[in-house]
Length: 192
Image 1 (spheres, rainbow, N blue to C red):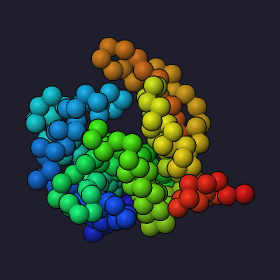
Image 2 (image 1 turned 30 degrees about the horizontal axis):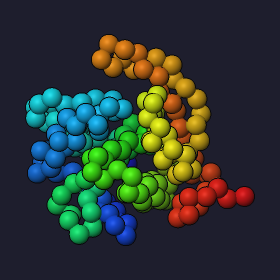
Image 3 (image 1 turned 90 degrees about the vertical axis):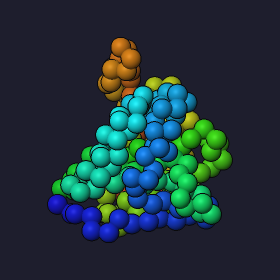
Image 4 (image 1 turned 60 degrees about the vertical axis):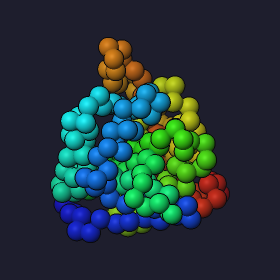
């Protein structure tokens, strides 16, 4: 198993992606308790204690080599998070992982997550040697489906009744991108 010795920081023209730290606890709670953010997210937090469990999970996946999540900051404000993204369920033997991401609503529809995913995908495919990166998107989350498609992910199917959320079974759309897919990350176009 590949242990992560030094947590990598990633940068784009407008963003800085860094390790989530204990000082980000209140921010992570703000995101995970915002009804707009968690509407299509697998969980939500009602208390800081619940968010503490998530903070512990961020450390656990790094310590055990099964994932890593970054806090997303504007380049000129590296201490203030605007969202989070990362990979989990990293199966190093099979070179596969699952992708997740979210932003606070004030930063939606400005291209930030698209920019963030470009950097993250390059890192996952080049540095981590991941072959398959997948994402599961709740039915109705059109914005995330479109974002993944623009980033070269292909819809592979529908996982019917895959999760139980507030007493209702919810379908998940399965998207995946392979390192071998011919796709130009910088211009978000399929290569011939």
